[in-house]
Structures are given as structure tokens and as C-alpha cells.
Image (cartoon, rainbow, N blue to C red):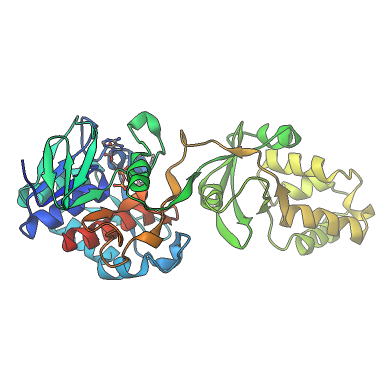
Length: 384
Ligand code: FDA
């Protein structure tokens, strides 16, 4: 069968690219090895899909080329996607930090995208392995179909048990595109035996400012039996490299607050003063870490400053991440150096496109990754 375009991957990006091209009149085949389309959308945002973010802009993305995402994000914005959601009468709400979720269920987003594909006459073939790709005479041949255009929308390898694979990288390499080494991102970090006191308080969550290098996020952190998780940690994990420290500000203006506590209750011990600033179990762990047991009234300024330094900048050296099994996204991927930022077409291989998570553009936590999927899908879908 002949088509104008074959799109590999019926996830967020593949579905919107197929609908866009189909509605513009292209004959589109959308292939996926999974038995259902949009499986990651279904589990996203705790089942309610955080489908975009009102603040989405190029500054919310990591890439070797921080300028690459600008054009696509500007031409199909969060407001454009929201308008589509509203046309389908899907009720939504804003949670925190500009994050938009469905009131009902993530399934509504999948249904919307499938309806849009149906309007564009897109042929969807599920449970279909990609197999060999033959390229010659300007045509791509895949799974018995032929087209002059092929779109890689198979995402990255995070959450392999859902059918995620790195096949986009293998195909891209074959066509001479570069790959920025992929790594798990938006992922919990693990701590070693030197942090047993912190892993011992697993289940505890508290607001922090987490820093890795110059990246810093003020949100909740969660102590787990393996290490650290929660939004602040997932955010900085995307910037973390093995061996680098993660710094947590547990208490703002700690020196001032400890001096005030010393004035107010000189007979109290550090543990008691900290329990006014931190959840109890964390206060206990930090008091033990800081390690002076005298009454605050007998504590020198230097000791107060040492305690404040630990509370204002607890420096931890993660031993690793929880890997692709737990990573919400994959950072790195198909290098943007070989792609047009306007159309997502490979500059050296006419007719070959790459979109979504497969590309080296990775968003923060909070709806930014779907917005990249939508924006890059639109750019390619309009170009087909
Ligand atoms: P996506 O992974 O969606 O689709 C790829 C498709 O390719 C899949 O259908 C897959 O089956 C198919 N495929 C893969 N390998 C194949 C092969 N070898 N042969 C054939 N088909 C193949 N983001 C966000 O913005 N807000 C949120 O709320 C969340 N929540 C969230 C929760 C969880 C648990 C995860 C794991 C991820 C998120 N994300 C998120 C991230 C978001 O899901 C992700 O960035 C997008 O789904 C990426 O869209 P793509 O279309 O690029 O890939």
C-alpha cells in the first residue's frame, strides 16, 4: 500500500502528527507495536494527564541546543493545545505552577487524539512490529507499506515494561543522525550507606530547594528507602551527572532562626528547635547529623553557623538513579544538529522526520514534555 507518510509510534507525538497531516489531506499510516494507542498518556499525571503548562517556553527544556525548541513551541503553543482540548469539551483545571490536568480522565485526551486522527482519515495499525526499513529511490518501505516520508515518533526507553524502546535511536543512527547519549530523567535518585539516617525516614515529604549545579527547584522532596524522590528531586535529576552533589535547602534563613530560638528558649536543645522548622523525624535526623547536644544557650555562634550551613545546604552525593524502570522521560536522544527546527525533518535525509521524546529535547516536570510532543508533532505534521 502507498501512503504520503508512515508514522512510527502512536503515542502523544505520533497521534497529533498523524491527525495534523491527515486533516491537511495526506494519506497517513500510523504504526505501533503496542495493542493500544497512547498508553503513556493513559498513565500520565496520575491518570488525569498533565497535558500542558501555562508557563511552557524554551527555558523549561534541556537540550544540547537550547534554541532548537523555540520555533516549534512558538508556532504551536500551550494555548493552541488548550483550544483543541476545549473544542472537544474536555473539562480541565489548573493545579499548581501552571500545570493543566483533565478533570475526568487521561483517556479523554487519547479519545480526542483518536477522533482527530479519524477526521484526518489516518489508518492506524496496532500490534504491528516495525521490522526492517528499506530506503531507496526516495521511498521508505516499512511493514508492507511504502511512503516518501517517514516520521520517528517512538519515544525513548523510559518505562520499558510499557513497551518503550530505543528503536528511534537505532533507526536514526542508520540514517546517519547523531545521538546525544540517552539517560533516565525525572527519576528518583539513590543514596548510599552514608545516608542511612535519611533513607531511614522513608515516606517523609517536606518542602525544599534542591540544587544541582546552577539548576534549582523549590518544591517537595520525598525521602524513600532507596534515596530521594518527589517533584524537587525529579526536576534536578534531569541535570544530575554521576559523581555530582545534590544540595538541599531544608530551612531558609537557618542562622537567623536558630539565633532567635536560642534567645527565646536557651534551655532547649537543637532537636527541639529543629522540630519547629522541620517534620519531626527529619528534625531528629538532622540534629543527630549536626551532632551537638548541649542546650542552645550554651551553643557558640560558630556552632550555630555550622548547624545553619547543614540546614541551608545539606550536600548529598547520590550513588545513581532508579534507572529507566522509574524514569518519567529519557533525556538526550536524536541530536537536533541534524534536524530542521522548523519542520523536524532530517537535513541530510529528505523525508525523514523525528519528533517527541525521541529527540534531544527534554522538558521539566509539569506538562512540559507533552507540550514538546504536541509542538514538534504539529511542526512535522504541517510539513508532511
Ligand atoms: P510515547 O512514549 O508517548 O509514544 C511512543 C510510542 O511508540 C508508544 O505508543 C510505543 O508503544 C511506540 N513504540 C516504542 N517502541 C516501538 C517499537 N519498537 N515498535 C513500534 N512501536 C514502538 N509528561 C507530561 O507532560 N505530563 C505528565 O503528566 C506526564 N506524566 C507521565 C507519567 C509517567 C508514568 C510517564 C512514564 C511519563 C509521563 N510524562 C508526562 C512524559 C510523557 O508521557 C512523554 O514525554 C510523552 O509520552 C512522549 O511522547 P512521545 O509520543 O514522544 O512518546
